Length: 125
Image (cartoon, rainbow, N blue to C red; front, side, top):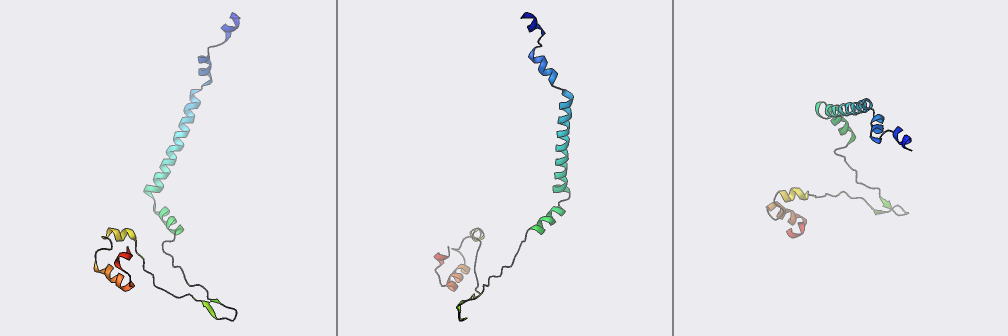
């Protein structure tokens, strides 16, 4: 039994023999080189020549689009119109801009708008 125990190498030396340092260094070097290449490419695209990417992004997104809101006329079986699309004017406001400008409690314009719409000023808020 003692002879068999002497022939076995200690566990620490066996682990050290399995670890090949030049392969590990080569792998780390390749990973760092790939990372440096990717960071360089990102810096090139974002900082040095972003014009192409901005143009591509602008082509993919539509900034202003006119939407036709007229619908077809609904008629009964004899051809008389039951529902007809009528053009209307719409009023809208961005709440953030209204709040930044001081709200609706101040100004003659809000009072004039309330009078034109025939609603109380409190109902606009």
